Length: 61
Ligand SMILES: [Zn+2]
Image (cartoon, rainbow, N blue to C red):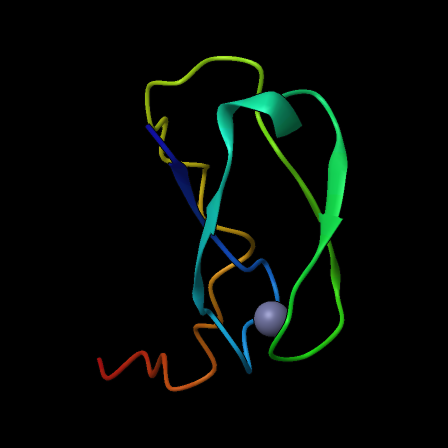
């Protein structure tokens, strides 16, 4: 069964299917060329979202 991981590149976010053999290795995204680490576990563990931009935060008091 192939492992599905999402490309960390926010401008790409392509779902990459990699063989279980690639666990613990780093593969290259075919779409954008970014290096993607394949998690050891087969279970898809969602990564914590990286710093969400909250620029539109207005304090109206
Ligand atoms: Zn990519």
